[in-house]
Image: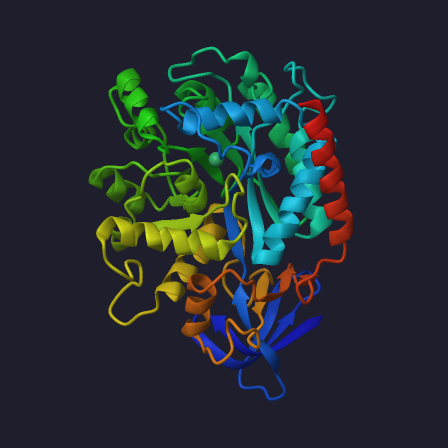
Length: 454
Ligand SMILES: [Zn+2]
């Protein structure tokens, strides 16, 4: 039994003072008491899940910022990315993911959904264990203490309608049988660990067919609450190509052909009509937004105000990891809406309500749902995944309750995250991780190696 005792905490019922939390040996919250004297300074928040990560892209963050030709776009970025990842082997992936996960923890994420499609060797041949690369991200999460929802990615084709994959895509490709072997291996490795969830992803409607992903879903139909993620409508070109191929927009096509429910997470549901926006909100699925990456790639703006008004669920992800901060994602999410509507406080949820609080509540809850994990609220029976903010930090001093969240999210780039707990274990202690020097050293030497061989 472990106990935390802090001056303030954000509970499902709202802000509470002098809160004592008991954590059972299994890492779940066993008791909550308020109004107990003797609390230490600090503000306890439920941990935020990062619902979309491609860990290997952390190694190339910042390397695609030179102008290409006049059509410089997502698709030229993708060429840079393909060139870079050609060199990454299992050991490199482990070192890159460990550095990334360390950064995510220190910024206040307690869980990551790892959308992992880099499965095979450069020539497309399989590792001795076909799940080797995804096992490396699992190992990196365990070694840093970050919770993980592993999402091995089904990627079989090179374009809409089952086009053949290109040579550069051979590392990603699996038929349903091979893909299910990866899922099985990850399930075995993650079994009985309450910080680990195994889900699945379809890379996109470009990379699977209704038949191939349908086979995968049928084989896993007995798995309860299986998280299912897909990249859906990030770029207008993707929308146009989908219409040319099928006559439908990507979200429309998905809903026509799959039973999309609350287990699903639609990554980059950026380009939706009003009708699609309402359909996604009503289905209970989570929209996964990655505002810094979407801004970096010039994707466009998500229809957030209408979606939230319709009761839609959403969460945030760091995707390409040009930012590893949850507050920067939330800030840009709100700023995008302000720029579109030329008005302030778009996502506050009502008159005189705190925008930071509303964004935080929505993203914590949507993130936990998308990750299929029993976290996202400080209540008895939930996982003890928490962030403690340093309320003595110059950014937060003389701030209370919702003001703490507004200042953390909207003011400056200092990091006031003091401690982070995952499954009741303190993995960030006063801003530091026990293995951070070793993790950073391995990351540096990995980048040096990649620079030489690429
Ligand atoms: Zn992505």
